[in-house]
Length: 419
Figure 1 (cartoon, rainbow, N blue to C red):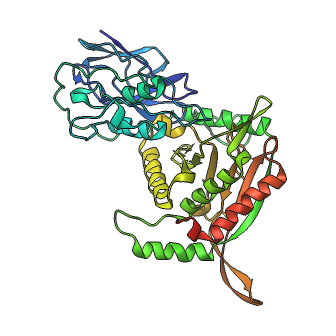
Figure 2: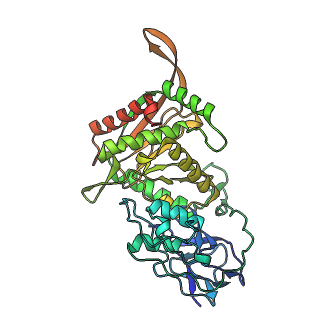
Figure 3: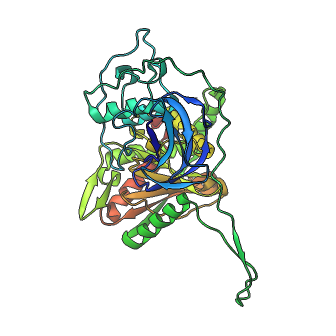
C-alpha cells in the first residue's frame, strides 16, 4: 500500500497545509487524477496522484505537515513512479531538452491539464512522451521524468482499466486565513488590538522582501513614455477583436517591450549571487498579480520570442489561475525579471522591491491625460511613467538608463511590438 506523502511543490517549500481533498476516503483514484489542494509557501496548488488505488486519507483538511510525511495511502495501487515529485525548475532556468519517445497511434496527445502546462514551461514535447496514466494519458510525473531523464522514456501505462470517472469537484476555495486574535487595550490608547496571523505565502513574501531591502544596494531610474501611438494601436486592435481574440492590454505591451530590452541588454536579464553575475539564457518575465491576501508572480516564459497576442493570452490565463488557486509550481518559478503594474489604481509612479536573484523590477504607473507641447503648441497627450529598481551590483546607472530608454522607445513605436 504506497503512501501519498506531502510533496515538494516549490523549490523553497518545507511544509504544506492541506486545504481540500478532491477525492473521498474509499474512492478509487487513477494515476494522474487531481487528488488534493495544498497551500505552499508560494500559492495554493493542486497535486495529482502518482499512483492508482483506493484512497485512505491520513491527514485531514487543515493539517500542516513537513515534506515527505504521509498524507494518505492508496490500497491496492502500484508504487509511485520513480522521480514523481521533484522540485520544479530553479529560478535561473536553462532551456531543457525534450524527450523523444513517440506519440499515440492517432496522432493526438492525451495529457492532463497540469501535464500540459508543465510540459509547456519545461520545453518538453508531449508527442515524444509515453503516458503512464489511465489509457496511456500523460500525467505530471511523465513530463517530469522526460525533462529530468533526457533520453529516458516514461513508465509503461497501467495495465488495469481506468477507474470510473468521478464527478468533477467544485473549484477549491482560497486557503482560509488564520482567524484574528483580539486583545484588550494595553494602555497604548489604540483601543482593541486585532492580531492577524500571516498565511504561509505571506510569511515567505515578508521574509524575501526583507531580505531584498537588507542585502541589495538598489536605486531607481524613472522615465515618462508618450503613449499616444500605443493608445491608437490598441484602439485599432480593439476594433478588430473578437470573443476569442482579445486586444492586448497596455501591460502586455510593457511586458513585450521589457522582454525585447532584456534580450538586448543581457545584464538586465541576470542576477547577482555569491560575488558573481548570473546571466540567464531565457527571457522569462514575471507579472505581479494581486489576490485577496498576497501578491503572486507567475511567469511568462520566453516572452522575447512570443508574439504580443501570445503574451496577452498567457498573462490572462496565468492571472485567472492565480486568482482561482489553480496555479502550478513551474508557473511560479523561473522568472528572470519582473513587471509590477499599479496603474489600474490610479497610481502615477511607485518604486517596487527587487525579487532576490534578479537584476531589477519594472514599476508601471497609470496612463494619464496631460498637456504636452507638440510643434510649439500645447495639446492633449497621453503619458505613463515607468521606473526600474535595479541592483547596482550587476546593473549600473548608465545601463539601467539605457534599458529603460529602450523600453520607452519600443512603447513609443508600438507597431514594432506587434510584429
